Image 1: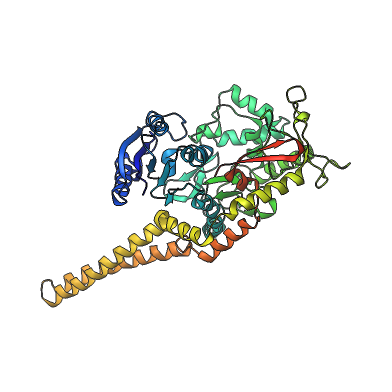
Image 2: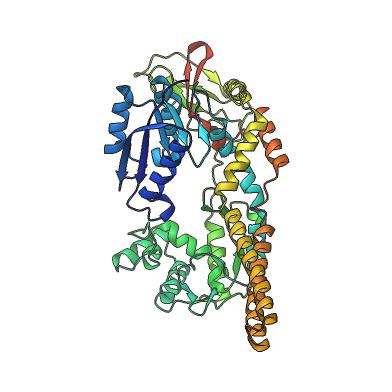
Length: 500
C-alpha cells in the first residue's frame, strides 16, 4: 500500500466571518479525517486573511513548492473553495498540477477523493449539473410563494425603488421617500418639456444630486447619473402606484437577480402603494418615448460564445455571422470562425470552420467526456453531498430533534403531576407552553418540506445525468462550466481544454 505524506491546507478570507469556516473548524475537520483514515500529516499550511481569488498566497505557495520537492503527496482541504474560488484554477490543480506530481487530493465535506490512481471525479462535474438544473427546478415553489405575496399587494424585494423606502413597521409595505420624491417629479417634467435622458442626467450631475444607488447605500454605488438610469425611472410604472410582477428573475443557484426580458410574462398589479407621479404625466412620457423609439438590432447569441481561440496566436477568434437581405434574419448554419478576419497581419493561421461543424465536434467530445461518469455511483455522491450541505435539510433535522425533546418533556411533566411534584395548575401552564412550541416546530418542518428542497428525487437526478450524457441540454453557460477554451487549427483540428 502506498505511503501517504499529507499536507493540510487551511484558508480564511478577511470578509469571511462564518464560524463553520474558521481556521479552527477547518483544522478539526481535516485533521480528524486524516486520523480516521490513517494518513500521516507531515505539514499544515495556513492562509488567514487571504481571498480565494488570489493565485499567490504565502501558505499556498509553500505547499506548491513542497509538492514539487516531493515532501508531500496528499493534499487535504475542508472544501475546494478553501483551495481556490477560481473555477479555471480548480481545473488546473485537479486536472494538471496534482496528477503531474502524483498527489492525491481530498475535499472532506464534498466527498471528493482523487484516489490512488488519478481520474476525473464525477462529483465535481455532476454537482454543477445538479446545481444548474435540479435546484432551478425545485426553486419554482419559492418563486410561486413570492408571486402570491406580490399578487396580494405585498412588497417582497430586498430594496425599494428609488423614491420609496420600506415602512418601518411593515417590511412588506413601501412608503414615499420624501427626501427624493421631488427629484422623481422633476425628471418626468423635464422630459415632457423636451429634455433628453442624457441632458437630464447631466443636469443632475451638475447640481450634485446623489445617484439612486448612492442614496440607497448600495455596495456598488454609481458616482454619476447616466441616461440609462433616467430611462429606467421614466419607464417604471411603480411611480404611479403599480407593481410589476415577474419583473426580475432570481437564479437560486448563483443568487443573481436579473431583469426578465420576456414582456409577455410581466403582470401589472395596480394601486399597490402611494403614487409619486400622476397617471396622465406617466402616460404622456410613454407616448413621447414610443414616438422616439428606433428599431433595435437583434443580438445573435451563439453556443460557443467566448470559448473559441486560435491555436496559433491564442487570440479569441472572430465570429462571422452571415445575414440575409433582411438584416433582422440570419441564415442558419452560415456563421463561421476565422482568425484572419481580425488579425490579418498578426496571425498566419489559415483556418476557417463553419459554426455548425464546430458545434458538432464539441458536442461529440462532450459526450465522450461525460461517458466516463458512473451514473449510479455519481447519484449516491450527489445525494450524500446535499444531505450534508443542504441548509434546509439541516434545519429539518434540528427541528425534529427539538420535537423529540418536547415530546419527552410532555411525558416528564405528566409524570411529575401524577407523582404530585407539581400542581395541576402548574402542569397545565407548562404543558400548554410545550404544546405551543411543538406546533411551531411542526409548522416550520412542514414549511420547509413544501419547498421541496429537502426531498431529493433520485429519479430526477438520474434523468438529468442521462440527458447530459447523451448530449442534450448543451448551453453556453453549461459549456463554460466544463470547458476552459477551444483551440482551432488548420484542417479543422480542434483541441478542447477542459476545466474538469
